[in-house]
Amino acid sequence: MADLYTVAARIGPGVRRFGSPLLRLAGGAVVLWFLGRQVGAAPFENGLRAVTWQAVVVAVTLTFATSVCCAWRWRVVARALGVDIGLPAAVGAYYRSLFLNSVLPGGVLGDVNRAVTHGRRAGDVVRGLRAVAWERLWGQVIQAVLTAGVLLTLPSPIRPALPYVLAGTAGAAGCAALLVRRAARRGRPRLARAARAVSDDLRHGLLAPDVWPQLTLASVLVVVGHTVTFVVAARVAGCTAPLGELIALLMIIQTAAVIPLSVGGWGLREGAAAWVFAAAGLGAAAGVTVSTLYAVLMLVAVVPGAGLLLGDAVRHRRDRGQPAESRRADPAPRELEAVRD
Image 1 (cartoon, rainbow, N blue to C red):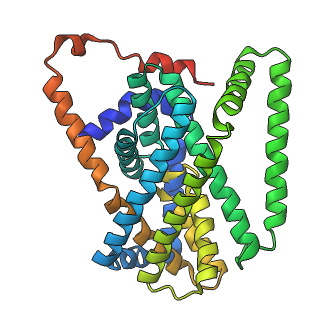
Image 2: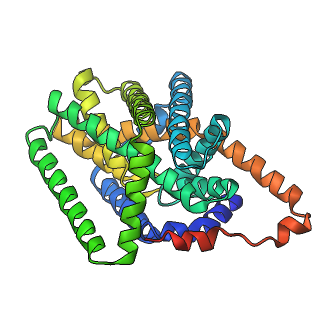
Image 3: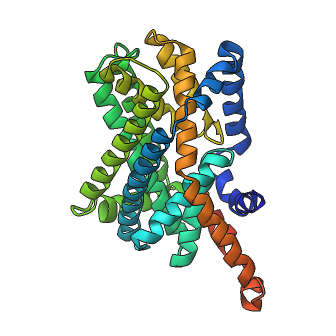
């Protein structure tokens, strides 16, 4: 664990640019404290006791498949931005990032580590960061679109209010885009550079005819894999809700889990599970149990990332005696400062 926190300390300056880690930790801790007050510790204990080896095998298999799809999506984005990475290396890096996201505070340290490490090896940390940011954003957009489609089709607690939520989200996004464009036109150099970078990445990279279909297909497969894993966890935990209703509830939970307000991944996911299960008449405790079981299964499934990190640490210590490596300055903090906006 000391090596994991060493990694976190090295990439900390980049993480602070994406928001206060303390705020994210506090948000997740508050949600967990509130759940403990409302439902007690029994639902969490039930989720831990519900783990079976069959569920672990399914989770490990599906997580491998989704990790390959995520690595494929990342490789396509990186290649489009000029910082290509091989698929085996991308899969290994993704497993490392998944494990770090699962055990370190905030839920994003693994992605920042993946971006900085790949950027340094490719000779361009800025493009490495942009590649990971676009890869994650594309996946979240596809997940949001699929979630909206599922919730408009299948029964769920928020279905009556969904059109208003979608309209408000679209309006807020449009206003934000207009404000950024207006500020860039008024001559603010940082916003102008950011707008140009986004435009170039989209026009000459992500929206190319041979790029966006691959990104979309990979993202759809990832969402399907995570949803199936969640359904398995729900059934193993004893949830007997109809499959259509269960999928709608789980899509809401997955969307809430994207928000990085958590303690090692725990927080909003459990809070959202308690809320949607209670709103559907299944009980908040059942939602917490299902979410806990899912979290445990996913943690076991990303353990290979810990093995890869351990191997990295062993190689690093073995090479530490080389003078050229030990005295070479790390360029990552300087280049992270360049992309703070």
